[in-house]
Length: 205
Image 1 (cartoon, one colour):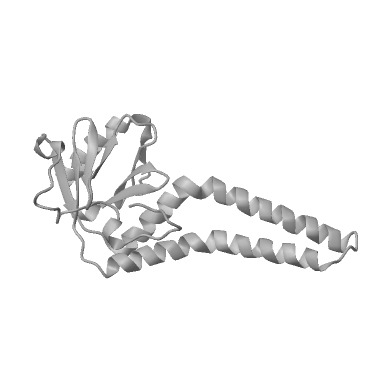
Image 2 (cartoon, one colour):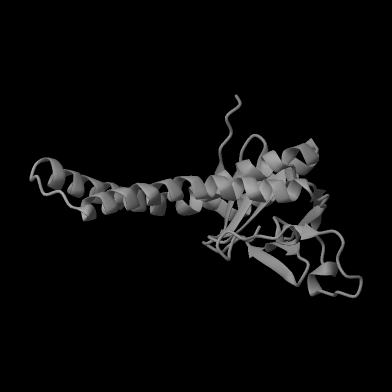
């Protein structure tokens, strides 16, 4: 899933590769030995995946911006109450700070809802291939290769899904409901190639 252009994402760019690729498209990885999975995505899975992705990539920045806004609010509040220095600027900075905090908190939620709504209106089938050295994802234009050895890449597993995070702008979601036990076990074998970047967040005992 590519997340860019001010949170503007088209359904055709979401989450993983389309099965309906061009018949004439050729890639050298097409003929290599691999393990392939196919799946679809539901709106609730998009929301949960995006929420986890936002936590992974934006949590620290969000807290920093909120803290800065709260400092501005406290400075102006102190100036008004304890120093009796009241001016329109105090109200402006306090109001603007609360507005920024609201945007920081609400924008990720709005983004998740918009993406989930877009996917709900599409019937898309996705696929992902696991090779010995990388995960390969063919997209509508070109392909994406995710090496296991790259320190920027992470593989996350929880009770409902697998997630591959390969940058602050890109992630892929694979729901477990589309996989049988053998496929889940096989994916875990490949996930171990990420070493310490294979993160397990299972809640069920």
